Image (cartoon, rainbow, N blue to C red; front, side, top):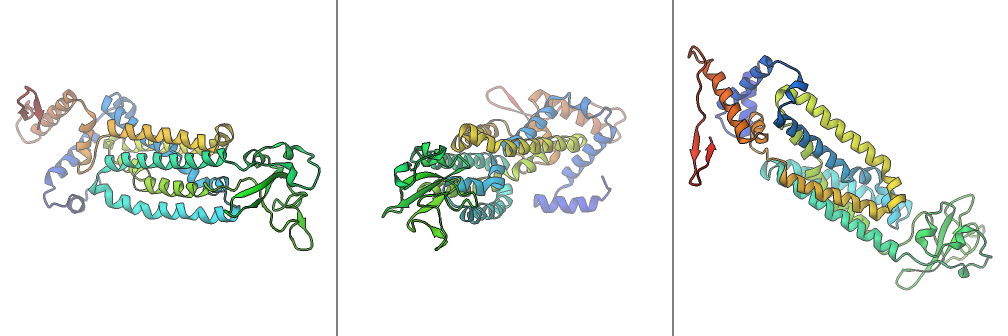
Length: 384
C-alpha cells in the first residue's frame, strides 16, 4: 500500500524462510488492486457467506477468551486465595505467583505459534484451562464440605447475637459482622471453633471471648487461639494455588495471544479494520460482563459453582476450535480467505481471479481459463 515493494519482499523472505516470494507478492498486489477497484461498503460485502463466517469465528474466539474466566484470576486472585483459606497478607503475596507464570508462559506461545500452529495450541489451551478450573472447583467444594464446625460452648460468654447461630465456619465468615475463633490440634487442623462477633475497632480481633484483644499483651485473651475474618482455614487451600497456576500456564501460550493472532489473519484487506474492531469490542464487552458479575456469581452459586461454569465454557470453546476454526499456519493472508469458502465458491473466485489476470497480460479481451484439477479414484476432483 505504501509502494515499498523491496521492503515487503525482504519481510516476506524473513517470514517464509525462502527467497522465492514472487508469487505471494503478486497475490498481495492483486488483492490490493481488487480492494481499490471494489464498489460498495463493508456492509454490502458482508453479504458473502465466507466473510460473515470469518467474522463469526473471530468474535467467538474473543468471547471464549474472556468467558473462560481469565480476568477473574487477573483481577481477583487475592480474593480467590483469601476465600480458599489464606490470610490477606499471604493471599496478596501468593497472587504474584500466577501473575509471574502468566508473563513467563507467554514466551511458550511465541515459540509454539509457528512450530505447532494456531489451532492445536488454542484447543489444548482451553482444555488445560478446564482442567485447572476443575481443580479449583474440587478445592473449594471440599473446603466447603469439610468446613470446621462451630459451637458457642467454647466461649466463656453468653451466646447472644446472630454469630452464635451458625453451625459451620463457612456460614459464619459470610457474615461481615462475624469471625471464626479456633484452636489447632497436633495435625495443625482447626478444632474447638466458635463463631463470634468482630471487634468494632479492628477485624483482627473478636468483640469478646477467647479471640478478644488482651490490652496487656496486645494479643488474644487466650494465647493459643487463632482468629480469621472472611475466610476459613482449610487443608485444601493449596488446591487454589495449584489451580490458578495451571490456569495461567494453560492460558498464556494459547487462549491469551491466539485469538488476536487469528483475528489479524482471517479477514480480507477491505474489511480487516472494521472486523478487527468488532472482535475487539466483543472481547472488552465480555471482559466487562465477567469482571462485573464475578462477585455476584460467587454469592449466587458459590465460588466452586462459578468456576464450574467457566470450566463448561472452556470445554465448549475447545470443541469449537477443533470443529470450526481453520489452521492458518504457513498460509498467506490471501490464501486464508479460501479456507472459509465452499468448493463451489472457491472455484468461482479462482475463475474470477484467472479472468482478471488474463485481461492484464495483453490477451485483448478476458478469456475463461478453467482451474487445474486433480482427479481421484473415488470420482471426485481436487482443485489445485
